[in-house]
Length: 218
Image: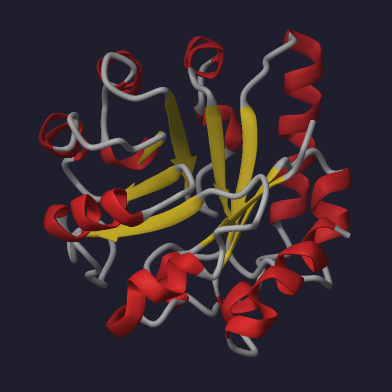
């Protein structure tokens, strides 16, 4: 399976976001990752629905929305007419993940669930795993960019790999936090086929963006 690289727009120049996105027009197999934070589920705030809608109108790549919010059901409803490709919400934000997955699938082509570093993988039931299109493994505490990769993530990724093989699950495994050229190849070998990277992709200025993406693919 082709490795998807998902540049996190949290690291782009927001004063020139349309120009920033155009630098990726020729890139293949990328999603634009939107970190949506509400100041409650995590202690930071980013952009809301008007900005998401604006980005959807100027993006030439699929949008990958990661909702770090206490009320994902609200966003499922209010953004249902926006062309978001993947809608990911947090397992920790709901007591009814299966219901939310099924609700989101009515409106979005791909639906994912995310787990924080401190949430054991075995909290996710086989029923949930059979319904999702994507599992987002946070390798840093959600809420801020530029953090270092938490080494305990490797054990969790191995548990996921074993479970996927045993049950023939076909969800995509996405990892977010501290991803760079130093660990990208190992992450791909560990079964990750979607790498979120913000600081690494956007470092060095626009002339380096596409090269940085290829460095992540190894």
